[in-house]
Structure formats: C-alpha cells, structure tokens
Length: 110
Image (cartoon, rainbow, N blue to C red; front, side, top):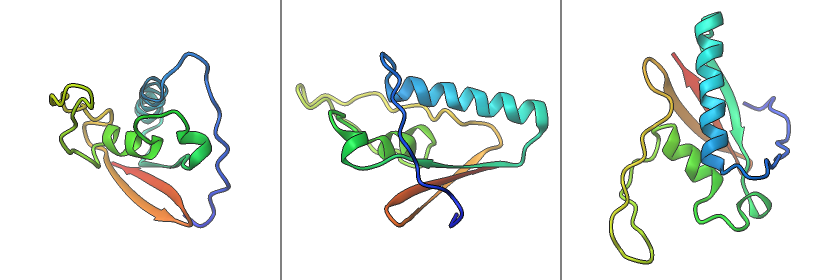
C-alpha cells in the first residue's frame, strides 16, 4: 500500500461515478476471467476537488458498490427509503479497505 503513487482524478464528461465504476468493475471481471488474476489494488480519489457538487462522496460510492457499506439511504426531499444498491463485485471476490494518509486504498481478492 505504501508504494501507490498519488492519485490524479480524471473526469469523464457526461458520465456519473456509478457508470464509471461499473465500467471499471466489468473490466476487472473480464481481466480476471482472461488471466485468472488473484487480486487487484486501487485507490479512490477523495477531497474537495473530487467531491465538489456530489451528494455522495466518491469514497462512499466505492464503499457501497464494493459491498463494504450497506446502510439504509433515504431521499432527502421525501424522506422515503431508497433501494439498497447492489454491489458490483460479486462471486468469489471480497473487498477490503484501508485508509492511509487520507487516501482510501482498496484490495479485491479472490
């Protein structure tokens, strides 16, 4: 974990973070199926620049989509419960998270 370089956030116009994360997860699954990789390590961007204008931080989005966070969510306008998001990584993979030096580092292992 200590050897990861600084993360530089890249924006994709017209794509929400969930769409990008879903595309990345599909690429990870395809990579695994082709090469039988045992695990993946990556970082989530965080901070004011990345989270500006977001209702949910990018780190929290990663946590939810990787199945690390499963708390009830509510529509702030109506107070009604939202549906529970389905983790994108399924099957034999398990996600782990550690936060070091203000960075959220994730590991996916089979």
